[in-house]
Picture 1: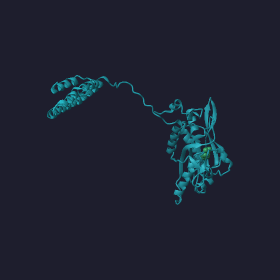
Picture 2: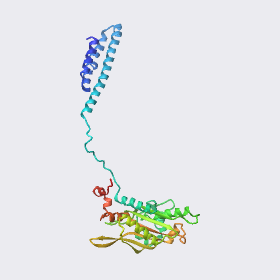
Picture 3: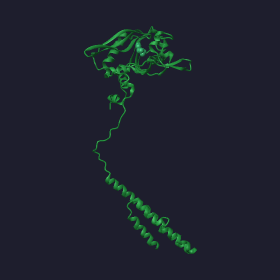
Picture 4: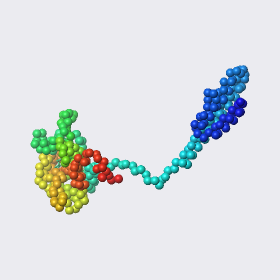
Length: 347
Ligand code: PHE
């Protein structure tokens, strides 16, 4: 067969290929081990050196143009496949889509954010602090010295090592130590000013106690408030906290009761109760501890207790969330059951 004939044949063969597989088969017929071009090259062996040179060059040219044609055919077939796909695979934009599953805030965190907004609107800033606390910030500064019986009100998880100053470490039992840290810094910052600007903060965060039943969890969340100034009285505490409850529960007729109580860090101290009606019966539920900051605590904060006074309160975020949404078991918050959590999704 002449070289031209081989070339023609290959062109014809490639032209009729419709798939890459067809093309592979045709390619083998020309360029494969026993393909026409290979046979032609083998035939060179019996020729003289002169003839080899000339014929060899011609065969290589032939091979080159078959290869070029092969590449062009590949491009043609690929375009063909793409075109077929475009024609057959249509997207129906009128079909309803698949909804993306979005996460959402945990109900207790929804409460925290809401309370932060309410207190921000009342002029409070948000303060934060460490969950692993020193004994001093968690207890001693708050007027519960070592071996004080009031410490047993809040038993917690102790950490075996001490910090670099030899201070005992524990998981904080309340967010009150945040208030001590904040107030101390504030007092230090304004120690050369005649009158220190008011401290007005809320301190939200995780807290820990050795406690576990339907209404107590070893880990829970608190939000505590502190307002210190020259004339911040118990009446201000009543006004601020009652106002907060009205906004939080969206009820202007809310009934609140301040019941005398004891905390080492406040004097006088109170438990704040709120009235709820259940089956036509009124029930008082405790929602917060509160009181006027004890003079000793003020001194531990570096604040002159003869010049300044103020109030503090501390509420459990889980408790407030349960009352707001009518949840009756605290453990639901920690089980991670999607059917429970989904009901609070805001998306
Ligand atoms: N820290 C107290 C507690 O966790 C609550 C509290 C805060 C009481 C501030 C009075 C004043 O029990």
